[in-house]
Length: 308
Ligand code: PAF
Image (cartoon, rainbow, N blue to C red):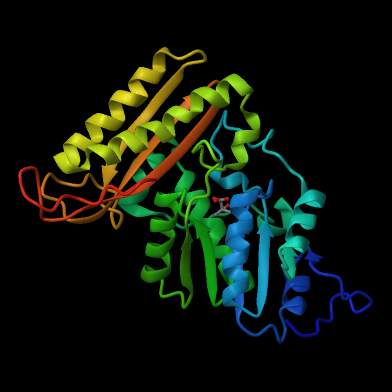
């Protein structure tokens, strides 16, 4: 990024801006812009998104906004971690140019009347468990894309359905923006890195490893086809219902990543094995790709079941 006019006295990065006008000034003459949309509580997974963005753009913008529209009644909007100072430090370490941290009043000066609906894909899995979630996500993401007008935006593959729906929105609404998916980052024991992991006690965190074990078991069952994958993953997650503290499964699904509908028995190509479960009061999601070739049990070449 070259010069900006918002805060001429400082060349410190990142420049933290809160309004659309400050953002516009900060991005004048910004070259190729990458946006990393976040809700803050930045962790190693976000860092990997920022690095991907850094490699591919002149100017990296990280948005930090806990979006009320994507939280349902009884969800964790109020207790969601808000750590702007620490987050700004993380952005500085990752060479981010601009942090856009709007207030709720800036993003929603009035209750929105026009929102972006996800359609059928938005009713499945996460959408079924969290009604209105994808409307909230797509509405805020489209607002951020309009405000920042990036060349590309980077999202974590951990939220596989979210990225699929965002890709679909960008295509359907002809937004000239490349959507880049970044691989899920895992702790050494396999737990997918997530802002919500901070809610977990040590015991809950140990129980939560069942999600990763379920995905690994599912992948190992790939030679038996989609139903075998589902059954293997489901068995591990159901077994974890006996753990202390228990894991309460929400769904185990093997889906076509383009539609998030169930992968049929003769599915070929890369499917997504996705799980969601609650441990204590924390809801966790995770997923892995599982590739099916034409080969099925009894043939020489089997599906790819590479290690997670
Ligand atoms: O993935 C998230 O953190 C949020 O859903 C997003 C994309 C920043 C929209 O609020």
